Length: 481
Image (cartoon, rainbow, N blue to C red; front, side, top):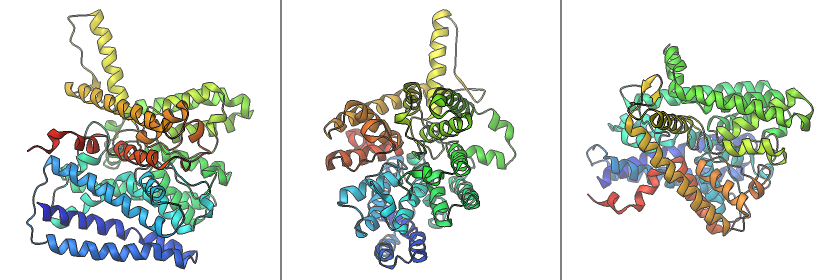
């Protein structure tokens, strides 16, 4: 089994190393020859290591991964990928320590978008491009990409998908999980090309447009500009990014249903309806309360829509500093940090469907008090929900809260006030990016002590992998046969 796992890891290592090609092309385009070698050197080394590991494990027969093996492999793959992603940043000398480059890499692949940098515009173009490309790879999931290619090895990948995908329901949209992965990546790739094309039409340079599409579709939030999307001062660019952030926060399996003509099933989706209702209601409220500040309805709607969507989808872009808004608007933004995108999307957070399940169960409890002998079940997508779904969501909610509070406690040792510490914890576990106070949208995380940054790396990865994939390792029963 060890040699078989080694072969899978070598395959993944080669995939991640191959993604260095685009930053190299970007660097060559801008004449950054010296920086390009920060990608070429680890590319060559990784390919050599992957080749050795591949041939060492080649004699091992293909085996079916157990559930435990799937979790272990996914955890190893993500940690290894984050270390590999940090290498070009470290070799370029753009950051002071390996702690900072690893934090930036984890933030990139986990699509958190929290940065330690105060001046990203001083970075080489290819380094900025790589920071944003990490979002794209981590958004849909490097494991999902690997699973799409696993048939080349004769391997099934459901255990890997289950350990990585977001949301309480780990299902398939086609009978074969590899086919599912390919379809998801095809949709993801198509949306990326479409957004890039639209941003170029609006005047954004090609490499910037492609990189910001990576950040948008991956719901990450890294930008090549210090003032994020606000740098371009273009309503059309803001609306394009806003729309694609909204689309990225939707379960990607619904796009497959649309492509196959099953529109009725999309309209029945409970989570989608709750997601859209939440967004439009929040945008309406925030638009009204910030109207006196901007004195223009269209400007208020545009800024409110962008900030609301970027927080709900956990993207973290900014066109305005919401910490300077009036208190009611800040309160809405604060509440939205608890929500997150839809299950099966590239968005992070608690997920809309979990709040829907808890809300419906609360309603049933009230009805049960009024009618003690009644039998009530939650209904999802117009069908009775599984009874164990409520228990699963409640357990996840407990773990989520524990990790947020524990991360808040750790944050206080880094000199953060309570509001900054709590919202930073929400941001890390929910993969959001900005918080309030010292970690607001116009600030960065570079001032934190190394211990807190390393803990944040754990929190970001745990949040991206739905908690269990990393937390399982701390339970002795996980290691017993």
